Image (cartoon, rainbow, N blue to C red; front, top):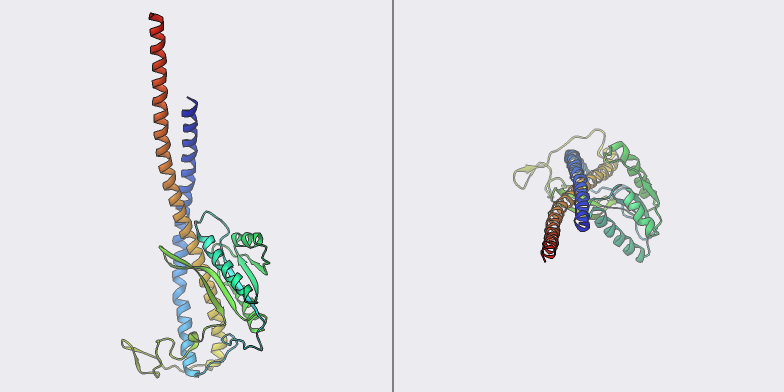
Length: 307
């Protein structure tokens, strides 16, 4: 009887855990839908900013800007900055582990190459990981689960200032990139300096044709008149490109986190269902064995009384 009671208690505990994981799955699904709308809604704006930068650069020709300039051998400080985006909470499957493994591998490679890495970490999981690894953290970034552009802008301006002042040679970003609900991949990207492709003439059409000529399947490059001049506009748009790219990275990371948590909680709920079924079968066998033993004892007692 003791074994059957233990199985009943364990089955009850598993059912209670299943209720929790099911609820967390539903919450993660709702948050995913909300964060997905934000992540998808901001991408056209980010893309259009890059297209406009390309059009401006096409009118200038050879673009020279502090955010595009790569330091030469004399200007290099052998110091880089890396921003790592993780979550504040766990129970998100391999989300944090994938990003942190990639970031730690990049950190080891750059350190082995003789570079000093300034770590900027967003999320408690990342902070705890690097503290455990005894890696110094330059700045802990506190961003909510629903970041606004105004929350990200000061961080972007600080990183831009660090790069343009020559304190760091480059700024890198380790985060989870959201492709679709079924595809998210950890990635190390370069935030600064900006790629020349972002401000290359003809970048919007992917060709080097002159303005006004056809490009590919009937596409044409528009001819604009700029006011103020293109260089002044680039001074405004290139920093904005960095800020929108960083903001988009935060939105993608949060969306990927909710997907990972949704999948992890669904898997936990399914496993709890299987465990409940297995425990029910164990209980039935234990109960049948107990009944058989009791019947045998009764029959033995009857035979002893008749003898």
